[in-house]
Image (cartoon, rainbow, N blue to C red):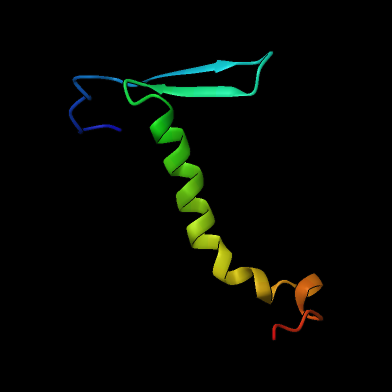
Length: 59
């Protein structure tokens, strides 16, 4: 972005298209896993509000 200092250690993204594998260097698979974990944590409470799940009764 204009006016902001550049990151002194830019990140490098590696994606292997022939495999289901991605890595964010220098953080490795931890950043990839944490992204999915955060997404799951934030979206799970809204799953019961989906139209297809409204017929399910929890006992």
